[in-house]
Image (cartoon, rainbow, N blue to C red; front, side):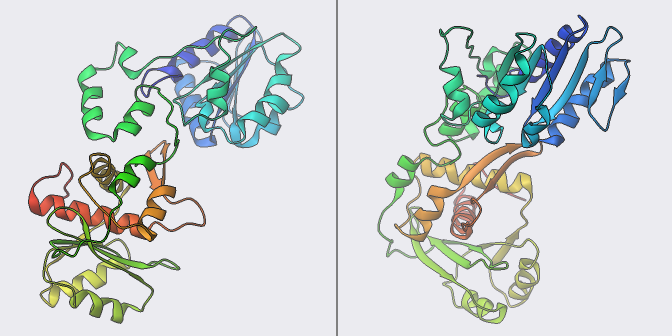
Length: 358
């Protein structure tokens, strides 16, 4: 169980080569095909050996072999046998329990092979239960934080500690599994920030415009960072613009990605104090981290209902391209996005936030 950037993938790739040069067979399992291709390319850059790009397989002259598989298709392991199986980012393997018992474990029987599970924790899931087997026959567990990597500047990790919500930092860098594995805010913090709607004047608005079956959500914060205006509806663009024009005169920040761009331009031409923010993976990550920090520091308040419901189911996951924030399938995140925009707008205008966009 390791913190991010500890070097677990590099160590496991070195170990796979150490086995293969002895003429042994290695199965290297990653959560996704894309990640398998990344690790395969990294190994083949260092090894001038025959390789099969389509099958992600490297053959050694003495019969040793490293072959990559994905957690999405563990049935491909059936009928195979290996001396070593490496399960990288095991916490993110779908259906890890059934995959281990029905597909992975049988491949080790012929050679009395070994399995190594490596991962940053993702809550107290099946990977965590395997980690807790330490002391049982044939099981050993090890834990390292990101600070344990001597090639990472500790100051970089310290900066991450300052920027990330505590629940995220503890899990991703200190390798301490959280109770709520995927929620970046923390249910206790959400509960602590839940309070009645403020009746004070609004000083900053955030608006998430409807897309497809979603709702347009308008949230306004008062001088203390508490929600003082909330509206959620489905209307055509004309009525949406009219609603925005009727809002109290104060700064507005709107999601201008896609359909939001022409609406933003129309309102700016009419003299409305409105700015746009285009969502990218980077800007959305900063936006969500800013909201998470505000919630965990108790600097924002919101009424119980649609806002708290969406905050409680909102999720994050780490991908090859960074952190992805979204609602689970079947749920909405319009209120979360509007609240994050409102907080960012409030922070920028008042100069009390770390997160801002140019």
